[in-house]
Image 1 (cartoon, helix red, strand yellow):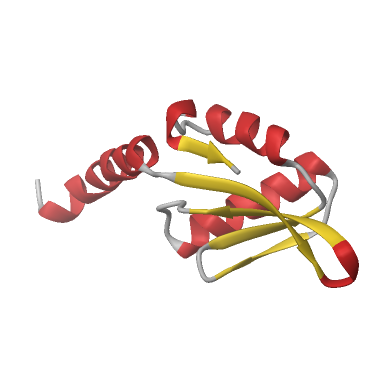
Image 2 (cartoon, one colour; image 1 turned 135 degrees about the horizontal axis):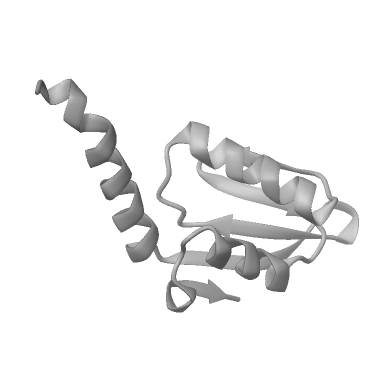
Length: 99
């Protein structure tokens, strides 16, 4: 077996460990025109996976949003639902801080 055969499994294990150890912060900010915005930061994921997670959250919550600089921004106050989604995706509930 070459090292390239082992890498996908290794990457999966590392991604799982990152999910378990991540200190995720979910907070609500008032943005332009006094619009509530849910901000999710501290997700230790590569850009592609983070973009995919942001897209799935937007669909599940029926809202708009974006992913910028490792931070997911969702239109509206969705703090409780975001925690549920992250727990279903494998993040530990104790590692998620809601502000």
